[in-house]
Image (cartoon, rainbow, N blue to C red):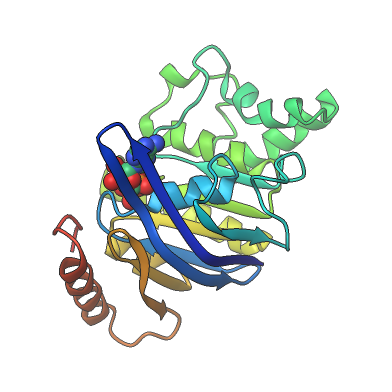
Length: 249
Ligand SMILES: Nc1ncnc2c1ncn2[C@@H]1O[C@H](COP(=O)(O)OP(=O)(O)O)[C@@H](O)[C@H]1O
Ligand SMILES: [Mg+2]
């Protein structure tokens, strides 16, 4: 379980300060797939970096199964995985070698690194591309490699920061559906940040709407929602009222 408790983040710079997170308070159950939506600059990536343990809160805290990711960074190695808009692959490593890298760092035996990496590349439809280098793959395929690299860890939590954002709509929706089927099957708790409301409504169990700076404007159960177009319009208006208009309807 992820507990977000009274979380606040302020960045101080030479010219003053920026409130990135005003106040966040919510819990995420194990295995939930939660969409986080809000306008550009509302603090979504900052929030994910705090969950990853690479940034500290100004006040309040995030707890994952009772532990703070920043303080217990070593405990969470391999337990939290993240995928970003850019694939962040190493160009000099093949698809297989990119996917097994995290396991190599964790000290998993090489034969197991290879068999697990192959299994996840297969699951993402890249069974014939183990030995391809990133530059030999399309953007969608490279993002599949990045997703396999996260799944191979068999993490408890996966964080997606606009992970499908730069792909064309057809590629993106297919990849998103494939990936979410895998995380649901594995029961991995997933925080899916996107500025695309349609994407969030199509793929998640629950949507948390952030204002700018980040605070919870709404917490919406998607399962069983009757009219998603009406909900999309409502969320759009809510974000627009609480931040400059920068979201895709
Ligand atoms: N390292 C940083 N130093 C100073 N300001 C930052 C830093 N990271 C983000 N910000 C500011 O915090 C706010 C939230 O940014 P971010 O979390 O990237 O938003 P989002 O991911 O929702 O677009 C923005 O105003 C941004 O300029
Ligand atoms: Mg961001």
